Length: 68
Image 1 (cartoon, rainbow, N blue to C red):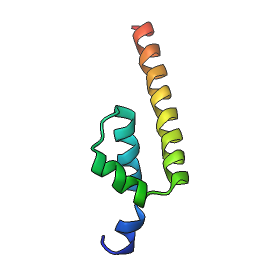
Image 2 (cartoon, one colour; image 1 turned 180 degrees about the horizontal axis):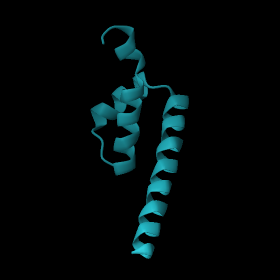
Image 3 (cartoon, one colour; image 1 turned 120 degrees about the horizontal axis):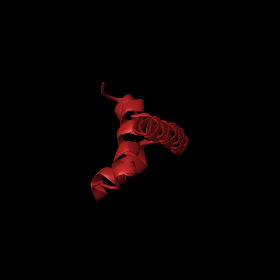
Image 4 (tube, rainbow, N blue to C red; image 1 turned 90 degrees about the vertical axis):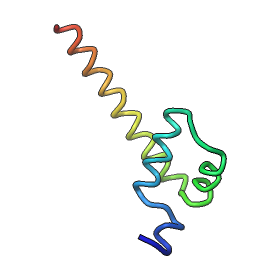
């Protein structure tokens, strides 16, 4: 993929940026690239979905640990 798709950002690029944000580790240059490429609404949507999946994962782990 090249051209406008790389400059606009993709679902994969947004997911990667949000995953790095969850971990709290990101280079300054990568952060600046994300700001220039990614749309805020896409980042918010992927972040909310990631947060919900994380909470569901934690609930599943706790239920598994309690049942064992």
